Length: 226
Image: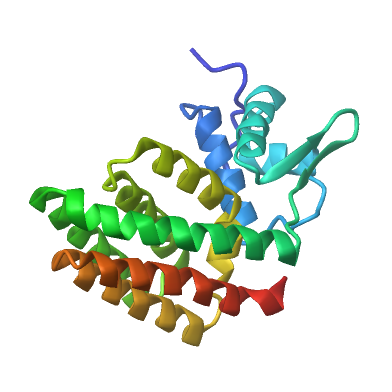
């Protein structure tokens, strides 16, 4: 049976297939925000996106609520929705807090992660590097986000995981911007190489230091673009 919420025209490159749910629509819109196709502060053009994604209003608006909960868009009653625009002060303050959180995450992960979990992080890092070497930026970025989330989980501290995830969600576009130039991307990858080396040797103080420096450098890489 055809889902009444889904249109049948999927010829457009952004189109969502019939079997997908609203979370997959949210993933497509999230990518458009991350890549800057939907610019910060811009109004969400529902009519255009409905046509491009090949969906009806119900799953689309459910996806907007998901993205609003993540802090990526702002839903304004009777006035539509817009992509959230962060001020430089907001970005700096979140990166400042996140640097300290991820420093703690690094130390705890080295103390508490199992050998198998560390091996999993090494495998994830290798997949990231493969995307970097092929200059495939969005898949690299998504694995990068997964790297930070999984490392947070290895801290074994649910409160820390929750707070880190909350801030990381709001900084999705900002973190993507940090790899905008070849030099910035290469520097970020170099920092990740340091992270994985420290994790492999369970050097908590070193990993903590690298994680904090990584976030401080993220601000240096993005501040002129805000």
